[in-house]
Amino acid sequence: MKIAAVDACIVDIPTIRAHKLAFGAISRQSYVIVQLRLENGVTGIGEAATIGGPSWSEETPESIRYIITEYLAPVLVGQPAQDVERLLVLFERVCKGNWFAKAAVEMALVDAVARTLEVPAYELLGGKVHDSLPLAWTLATGDPAKDIDEAERMLAERRHRIFKIKIGAQDPQHDVARVAAIAKAVAGRASVQVDVNQGWDEVTARKYVPQLGEAGVTLVEQPVARWNLDAMARLAAQPGPIIMADEGACSPRDVYEHGRRNAAQAIALKVTKAGGLHNTKRAAAVADAAGLACYGGCMLETSVGTAASAHVFATIPGITLGCELFGPRLLVDDITVPGIEYSDFSIRIPSGPGFGVQLDMDKLAHYRRD
View 1 (spheres, one colour):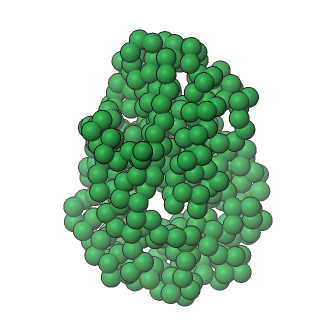
View 2 (cartoon, one colour):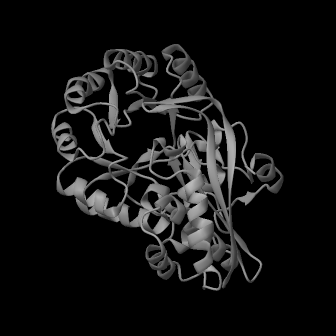
């Protein structure tokens, strides 16, 4: 199963509505799609998604594609694809960091090997313990009336009953009032979480996190800057909603530090920020050892990255808070056949071979950035 070629391209797909976060608004998502071909003719696929380009992390679609084509691909050709762990060590020798780029290539490696063996990818990752996962939806229009209408539609269609609200961009009092209105509207029928995306300082968070709890919020994600673990620990120590780390807990070492310093009660796992499927498993194992709950996060992926994330999340017992692998539902179009199966407030884990999805080459060509 030697690697014959690696290709990476950028695609841009509009969203069905503006997606507003603390650091900006998104009306189009950019992705790096990797196709890794083996000498046996099998092609594996992977994806790196970024939210708002460099707004979320240091990597951009352009830098990710460059790292893959100029540094990772040349050393992969001729290598045995099944030696994934050895190739991850090779990646680290070739370039430091660049976790999104490495994650996308590792996805394609695992997908190609699983397709060759004609098994679902989760079988190469330890076997699944979940057939489906409860699925959250992010309410991010910024307008409480529109958010409530959207939530009611999701409940009526049995699509979502976990709602995450993006806050941190506006005055905290305004944000809390908006969240309280939504929480009141869905009380008894859905749970409500918030994601501050590092938008508050500690003083603001210590004042408003309790108010969010009183309004019915069950979880607050990354309320302060990712480096401020001392503040996270103080927030986690006070009564109120679960404090979950996201931007601050990327690597297994980051998760260890959060556990050691009691800086969170939960961790958001994301395949790209961790540097791949295997590193996601490692981060989850550290969280389990530290007694931290896990949540399956997303970067608003297409069905390629969503399927890959679903396969690894399916193998992690500690994902007890559900997931938010709704990326394909936020896009005006998708680039795979079949798409992801959603039903009864959950995402179904795709069956294989590989990640269980194939690229629609016509749509890839349509959205591909030349």
